[in-house]
Image (cartoon, rainbow, N blue to C red; front, top):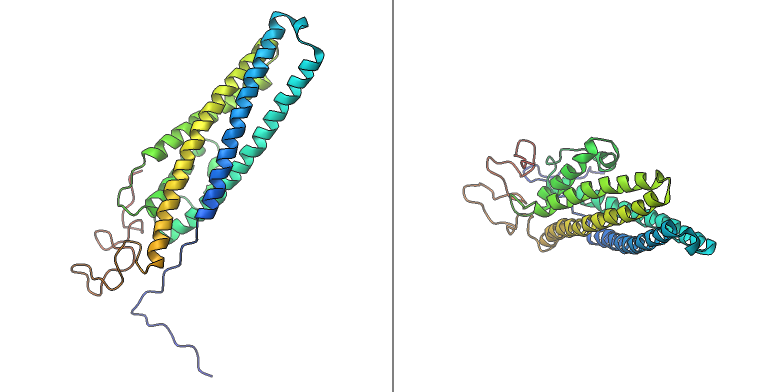
Length: 268
């Protein structure tokens, strides 16, 4: 029996195919939309609950015991439902993030500043959670985009809205749990509406981020299916002055692939 023939070393091995991301992107977008809709319902309940508390402040006897019990139940249930749907949205976003990060490592093996465990821990560890997740998403976008310096305005706006919304949400939760009277309770309910609006803005921008990265990676997959390398050059085309032609994805000045070690990195 003869051993299998060795591959000819003059040619690079075939590139690892990118995994499809549209399905997980749809899952993440639907989860974010559901979270936003539940947030809107919760905001309406907040305002209704605050108005009921206002009536109690003016005249406690104007509100029946049954109304108080119903309001407490609805208000508490909305908070639980909001937390559950938010958790589902977080999981959906992380599933999408892991998928696009895996593809981005194929497109740009050396273009990522944080290792994979930080895709989760970067959101949890205090202080560094202010910038690690943004760096991870920026690197994925840089690796996925088909232009040298892709715009990042949407990504910056999303991250700013996320940071502000998270801070206000945490403040609203502390205000609610520290409320020791009717007036602070009504103020906490109204302040929760502000946090919901800010998180709604962050969710809308996050959907934009998901769509941008997903579309960029699907373009790479479509190009590969059509027999085109990632850089858009048909197989067999020769780059000027490059003996043997260009490898898939093109080369950056100096002969380094964009994002590869030593090949330069975006100034994020």
